[in-house]
Length: 184
Image 1: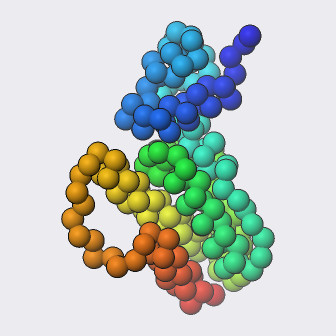
Image 2 (image 1 turned 90 degrees about the horizontal axis):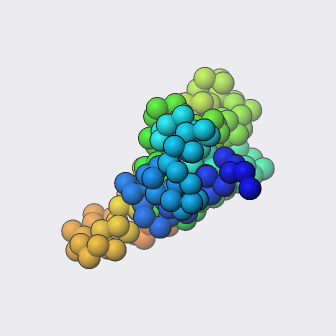
């Protein structure tokens, strides 16, 4: 049976979920698929390309809902947050892959289109949608770091926030969207 990119990405995502980003190696992915590590390079030129493929797969899980620009972006943001929280270290992975411009899935395209239709210029809409994404990634990175600290038995210092992560996320997202609305 021939190996496919999809099988490799599925195995890599399972390893990410089980072991985290630091331990997701080409050797480990190859071992999970019972192939030699060099075989993976027939499908991905390097580890960064594999990581970008996993990031794209994660990003594709988020919904692209309909509604007013604000309703749709709120739903997208909450959907993306849940998708990221479902995969260990995914916010860090997506941030890195986007930072190196390796992802092919443009997760901000749909929100930017909605924001532009609401009244911002296309360039401003891209900035606004990217700002939303940065908020989501930053919030989830902090949530995942907190989860890791708890998993390893580290006692977290008292946090200034008096709210749970869901409330904090919704409130922060509202601030970002209020800022966008003020520019329409």
